[in-house]
Length: 507
Image (cartoon, rainbow, N blue to C red; front, side, top):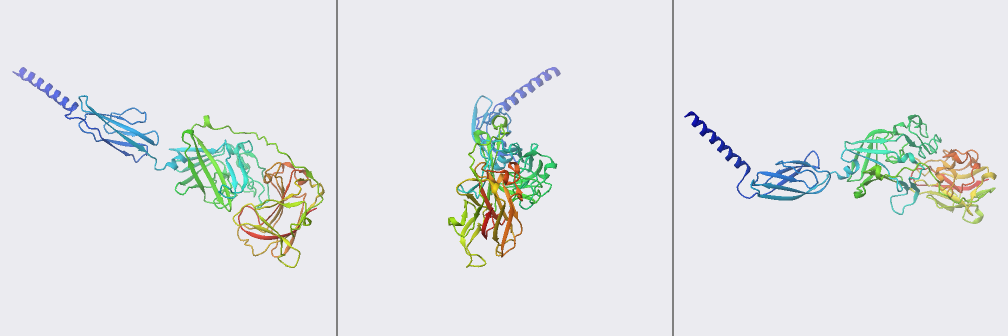
């Protein structure tokens, strides 16, 4: 009896198990596939999927991105990148009856511009190497006057092209000088405020001992370092925070040129990032606008730097140019009383950012001989009044010794800001070589008295400032300088003003 009961009990359990199994693997009715998807709070690439199907016992998910299918009922999936993906859910009711549902999931980055700048974790940028990477103009207008035609990867400044600027998603910013640094004009040399020239424009080893600017200040904080940044795509504003944080050129600051790191707590600039798409090369456009000057700088980030980044040109081969014939005058002069030929000897006004009005009244005596008016235009930077010889020739200075000129600086000008009471006279080569500001000879008179005629005198064998004296310590070693300039009121600012001049002479 016990054995029989035992056998009956075993069969009963087996039957119950079979029935239970069939109830788990098969459901009545046709399956209906349905699901929902919500983006994860942790990442815009990660979605949580909720299975809302009916009459099913198994699920298979195809996320449309080439990844392995999932058989989880409610999976969590991370897509590789932003984009549109056709997600398909297949459900079965246990007897080979299935249903599918396909929905397009649009994966969007809510911070797309920040991701373009800093990637998912970080992104590294460097100057574009296959086009003009930097230029200086009067404004951002397409037809604006170009002050400097631009920097290209032609071997003149190779140490600028190996610099990298890395933005991290956590808000940190890393500059890497790659072991070299560029001695920027007006920072390491030819600075009117300091009157010293520590380093010629060149690439040099990026060590603290070499980081001394034209004023003798330690600027080693501009070397490799980690800083912070903020980026506001809505208004196109990028701000670098921390002593020594920079991009573009170290001296470019929010309100003007900065000679020492830390002069401003932060430096802000216009910035926009453009997705390069299939090219794999994204672009970062930086612009500094201050005091009438517009700096445009272009950086790129390559998805595959080894495959697509052009090589840095390390040796500069100057373009051939036809030098002007040099003449040896005994006098170069202009009275500024009129534009009559008798009023000037060889020296003819050239195109300049500053204005010149000839034959105006003497500010001290309207009945006296007419004089010239030097007009600084408000909002325009670098306003040297330029002159060239007529006919066009370079100057051989062998018969010339002294520069003299009478100047009158009205006290009605506002000298409380960037405007100075300094007089500069200089020479440069605009034809061969063309970039006169890179190798000029300049003579300076500081703090000229106001409201009276003052005669300034310079000796040609004693220039006050030489940007790059590689072509000769004085003008007597030069025969390529074809431009004479006069600068009143200082450079590097857009303050408007008017001054008077008469009897300019080089003898």
